[in-house]
Amino acid sequence: KQEVTQIPAALSVPEGENLVLNCSFTDSAIYNLQWFRQDPGKGLTSLLLIQSSQREQTSGRLNASLDKSSGRSTLYIAASQPGDSATYLCAVKKQGGSEKLVFGKGTKLTVNP
Amino acid sequence: EADIYQTPRYLVIGTGKKITLECSQTMGHDKMYWYQQDPGMELHLIHYSYGVNSTEKGDLSSESTVSRIRTEHFPLTLESARPSHTSQYLCASSARRVGGYTFGSGTRLTVV
Image (tube, rainbow over all chains, first blue to last red; front, side, top):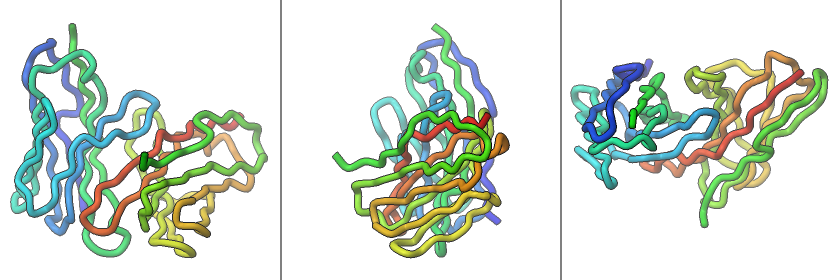
């Protein structure tokens, strides 16, 4: 059974700091890994999608890496801003069948001005 | 613009009422999903569909039902709403295999 773990559960940093969010998964049989952002009471916004054959993806101040063999991904946020405050979710898309996403419990990020 | 739409955004309804949460996508994705999320908690898959006339139950048992008569439309129905159904319901779609998921904005349901 695929399990996804995110560390830390919560993180508070001052504005301008660079930070790393961690995600690990137990089964390497995945199509891809996706990082999402969720604001309180809202839906999920996709940030980055990394295919299983890729090592990293970048979008603006965000960089996500994937090491499928070790079951790990990191999301790097450069020069954090108060507007980055949200819950960040990591999810892997299982191979076969439903191709469902298996989510971690998320990291709640607070960036203080 | 290709997207996924959920209506209503918020719904407050009395116990025993029948409700349908709407979800439509314009991306032509075969696979669609419904997730349930209680405040501050993780997402749980309650229904999914491979395509037209295909529906399956997810990991979390739910009293809701779904239908998939058209590719773009995946409504969720509760025949008799109860306070325990109070939650946020998120709809998503995905292209096959290597495609990412796209989520709607969600419906926040409150049953009083």
